[in-house]
Length: 184
Image (cartoon, rainbow, N blue to C red; front, side, top):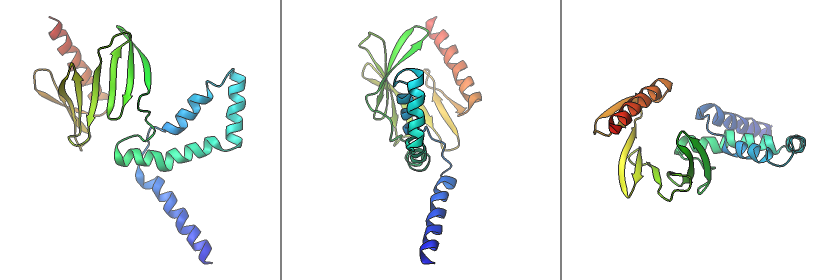
């Protein structure tokens, strides 16, 4: 009887970690496994590997580890334990390709073939995102606890934006206006 009660309590604690963390997270482990699976070979080989990894329960275990442990760590600490420091991705932009390297505390961005890089660095203590270019650091965004952020404009003024689609649209519009003003 005692063993079944302990099992019941353990199951309740386990379920509460999922229910009370309120964390969707990035599912880094599961996505990395899925990305690897898509590059194994021909599409039929990829499907066979996918089926095998579901039978062996690699996929379900990776999903469960993400949902319960890794995403909870990401939610409570603000950092993704699955982020690959040194991981470099090519991103296609309007003016060519850019290389984005994951750093411990942000990203390094450079135009493909160009040695100059700009870094976006997150300062956890100040809760800000900063731009570092040519050795000079400029505060770009200050995160607030109310679901908004202060966007610091080039002229030194701040604009409070909500962290949703509407706020991002307003921030893009201001950025476009400022870049056109700077080009004149």
